[in-house]
Amino acid sequence: MNHHLLKCCLLVLFVNVACKKQVVQQSNANPVVAKDTSNVASVQPKLDSTVARVVVNPNAEENEAEKISVDEIDFKYLKGKAKVSVKSTALNQTVNVDIRVKKDSLIWLNISVPGLPVSVATALFTQDSVKLYNKYEGDYHEYPYELFSEKFKFNLTFDILQSLIVGNRPFKKNKSRVVRENEYFLLKQHEGKVSIDNYIGQDKKLKKLLMTQEVTNTKLSMNFDEFTALNNYLFPLSNLITVEYKSEKDQKVYQTVITVKHTKVELLEEPLTFPFKVPEKLLNKN
Image: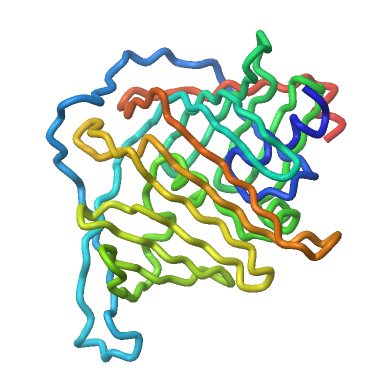
């Protein structure tokens, strides 16, 4: 696996990609083995609901506001495996990813490539920083989200990355207005200079998320599918991610398509740890 290919795989697993830069993650422990409590079969989903305050007419008065419920997945820890395929003009690659999440706190990834006997990278996203240890090339980097977002011309956050994995809305507290679009309720929001469209299905699940960076017009969309009963929730086992961005080099618009297929998912009560050990010499260089 060449230098350029590995970098692209690491970058596009979860976000906007320009196929040129690199990212890094941290962690601090050894994994706690959790018993298999996954229940992805015949559970009758008993869904939690969070309520988004929405206004049907953007010019409506306060007393015309109404509420619409959106079913969100609640959990303490998530453990899973996924196959991630990336296609762009520069790349066509599939990797295997081990995933661990502590809700609203940590996302840990261990990335391996079919045909190689060991993992090629480990990554950790916290609320404040993005860290990645590229084991294949002996490389480590750490970025705050501000710098990470600046590199990729998109306002990325931990909540967006967690949404990508779980299928919950990344911005629940923002005031929303709702528009009926075919079979969906469309919740429209703003977060800074990013516009967010949440497409909610008749089953109250988030089916599509579209985010547009207003300055660069970079678009990041997620299409959730293959909903399966898991621990009394409906969990999307498939996520089709499309990124459209304008190249600074030739001013052309390029598209990257990322397919995430969860092959195993567990929602756990037992704590997980997030092993991330970087050689001292690489930490000193960072």
